[in-house]
Image 1 (cartoon, rainbow, N blue to C red):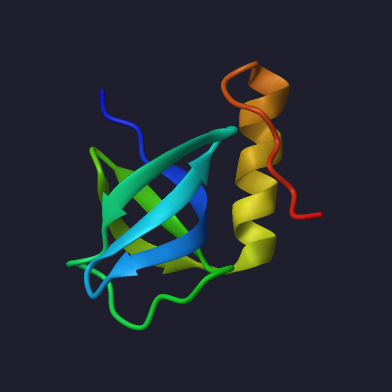
Image 2 (cartoon, rainbow, N blue to C red; image 1 turned 135 degrees about the horizontal axis):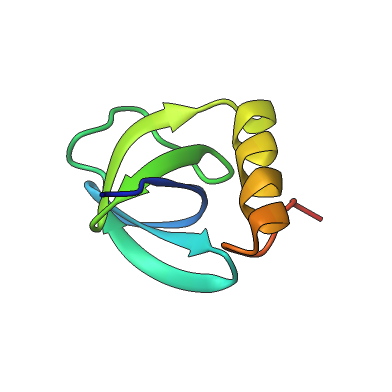
Length: 78
């Protein structure tokens, strides 16, 4: 089974790359499959690629569910 995780874009590092926060871990991912991503946006990440943008409310709900299950930390923006 594969799992895609919501992550918040913290920094754009190139035309098709960004640093995201995945449960407290900063990771560089590819944005090649998603257009118009900006700092602060949430994206669904799978194996190092953003698959689509996600609205903040839905992303935070999903992260809260993962946190309840003990999967990843809740990463609500400060």
